[in-house]
Length: 66
Image (cartoon, rainbow, N blue to C red; front, side, top):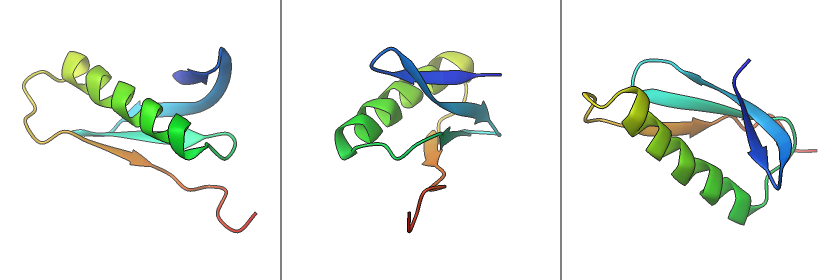
């Protein structure tokens, strides 16, 4: 399973589905952490799909209304 960390702890999973990377947080991310994780995901996409020009990151909002 592909995971991402926030402050050294597993905070969610990610998958590449075409050009976008989908992030699925395990808990609500602060605005600051969400920006940092999204920025890192864009850099990861440059590495895993360098030929793709239309890069995007989608963060699934699994904690809305909680």
